[in-house]
Image 1 (tube, helix red, strand yellow):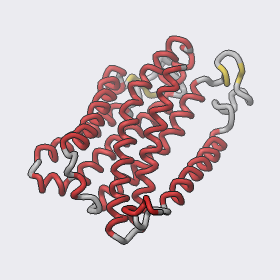
Image 2: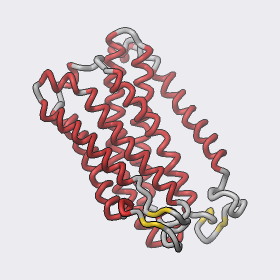
Image 3: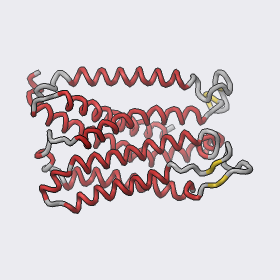
Image 4: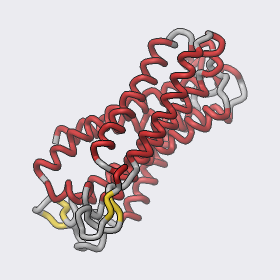
Length: 289
C-alpha cells in the first residue's frame, strides 16, 4: 500500500505542476502588458520545475511498487509486463519519456538567451546533449519486448533485442538523472539570473510548456488505467471480480473512465483558470486585490 501512496503523491505533484504550466502558457498568450507576461512566464517555469520534480521521482517509486506487485500479485505483474496489458506499460513509459524530452526542449529554448548573454555555452551544450540522450532513452523504453504473440513466451513470438528489461532499466535511470540535472542546473547554477529574462518567452519554449502540460495531465489517467486493468478480471485481486467479466479489464468501461477524467480535468482547469484571472492583469499588486 505504501509504495502506491507515495507514487500517487509524486504523481499529484507532477500533475499540478504541469497543469499550472499549461494554464500559465494560456495566460501568457492572452496578456499584453509586460508585468503580466513576466508573471505568467515565471509561473510556467515554476510549474515545469515542480512537474519535472514529481516526474523524476515516479519511476523510482514505480519500480518499488512494481516489485510489490510482483511479490504479492504475480499474475497482475505478468499481465502488464509479459502479457496482454504490456502495451499499456509501453504507452505510459512513452508518455513519461516524451515529457522528459519536452521539458528538456523547454529549458533549452527558455534559457538560450540568458546562457548566451552569460557566455555559458557549456551549459547550453549540456542542455542540448541531455535532450538528445533523453530521446535515445525514450526510444529504448518504448521498444516492445516481443512481437507476434499475446504473452511474451508464447510459441512463435519474436524477441526484440532492443526490448530487454536490462536496457529499459538503464534507460529509465538515465531519464531520472537527466531530469535531476536539469532541475539542479536551473535552480543552482542559474539561480538569481533567471529574473532578468522573465517575459521574453520564445514560441518554441511556449509550445514545449503547453505540450508538457497536456502530457503531464494525460499520463495520470494512463497510470491509473494500467493499475486497474492489471488486476483483470478482479476488482479486488482474487476477492471481487470485475463486473461484466472479461468484457473490459476495468470496473467500468474505458470510455466512461475517459469521460469522468475529462470532467474532473475540466473542473480543475476551470478552478485554476478563473481563480488566476483575479490577479493576472496586475500580478505585482496581487496583495491588494
